[in-house]
Amino acid sequence: MKKGKGMKFVGDSRISAERKSAIPKDYSEYPGRTEAFWPNFLLKEWLVGAVFLAGFLSLTLAHPAPLEGVADPTNGAYVPLPDWYFLFLYELLKYKFASSQYIIFGILVIPGLAFGGLLLAPFLDNGPGRRPHQRPIAVGMMLLGLAATMWLTYESASAVDWEARAEANKPIPASEVEIDTTDPGYAIYESNCMSCHGDSLEGSAAAPTLIGMEHSAEEIAQIAHDGIGSMPPGMFEGSDEELDQLVEFILSVNEQAAE
Amino acid sequence: MLQKIYDWIDDRVDITPIWRDIADHEVPEHVNPAHHFSAFVYCFGGLTFFVVVIQILSGMFLTMYYVPDIENAWKSVYYLQTQVAHGQIVRGMHHWGASVVIVMLLLHTLRVFFQGAYKKPRELNWMVGVLLFFVMLGLGFTGYLLPWDNKAYFATQVGLEIAEQVPFIGDYLKTLLAGSDHIVGAQTLTRFFAIHVFFLPGALFALLAVHFILIRRQGISGPL
Ligand code: HEM
Image 1 (spheres, helix red, strand yellow):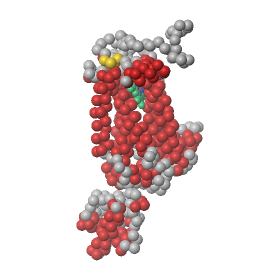
Image 2: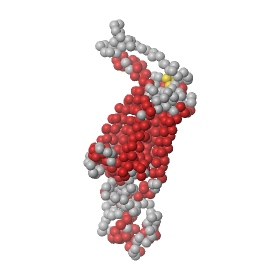
Image 3: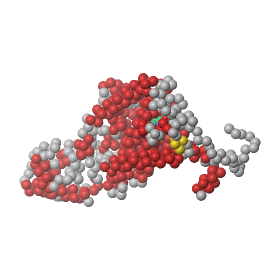
Image 4: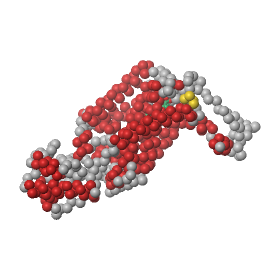
């Protein structure tokens, strides 16, 4: 560091008035075909970034972000699930040695050892060799942890029927549908369908919402008689005229909701 | 002209060292995918940062519509998703970005790990990195509640029950996060919002600054 008399500064500041015009570019540590970051390499980085962004935007366009129905704390039948990157922890807590009286193992000891080991890896694996085969223990532990995490995630995710979940939990804007309880079809809905499809067609743990479906009048009438998927046949009991009124009612609520 | 502006500013604030740190340096051969294709693994850190930038920008736009109270949170998200022009895309970017950033983080961590790039003198930067990983997981956990739909509500309830079972401090921890020792409700939502939007991003920026300054100081690790 330069100090002392003879140094010139800009005004009364601490900034040196001497121009260090060309700071030597020094990468002698690793000789080879080095390249200037600015602007050559940055341009290539931008190309990589652009390709990445295009892929990412295609993903967001192809799959809109999911949104389920508004939180209903009284819904006792809802099966909770965290986002996918927490599934491994969630699954871990299902094992006997990591739950109930051993819960401390599940929530503190095992994750603590794993993540603590990760945090302190440079001090646990402190030999000079950098190549993987020079540090078999560290690499082995990492592969083991990685395999366990992937296995737990897979176990947890494969037990879930994602499509059925999405289907059963479609968002319905509560305020937008107003059920006309004087509609003759409403009484028929009430006695035949409401126990599963909910007070305002919003669905329940047993059956999906009837709002926003893409069935025609004939199809709805047929489903009422014959059932579909997990809905058993013969749920509707009544005359053909009542069936017409019921279908009419369901479609009118749908029309109103679509507005 | 540009050179003159540069000189004028440099004369007053001596930006050349800063400029050199940010841009005017050499890229060594072993990290340049143009010379060794396998060097693309060195892109993972930069791509992680790219997704973080996407998250910050899309998140800023989301807060223009999002209302953090239990009456309106879900409605504001539904409105954004269905009515606002391009709202679905902005929300989609934030939603998918949250997953992609975890994937990129994992790849970046594995690159650093298997290359042994955390060895002396880069131990501190590795630890800063692991803390960054925790902050990102925290952002994921708190962000998941914000749409206030069923999956958000019940997953958070489970998460808080787990926090509660931590010995000694469990109850305090739960109350700190949820704002109440037994209700997941209005208080929980505002707290998670504050944590997601102010506390954790603050920690994230500070850690990122340290991460990048250390990388510049130490340079990238040499070839294996
Ligand atoms: C938001 C999260 C993160 C961002 C944006 C980020 C970004 C970066 C960037 C741009 C580099 C330069 C080299 C490269 O791109 O590979 C780097 C290097 C490094 N990162 Fe990260 N990183 C993050 C998280 C992490 C994590 C989770 C770890 C480890 C657990 C970590 C450990 C390191 C280390 C030790 C280096 C120096 C490697 C070397 O010199 O070869 N970082 N990081």
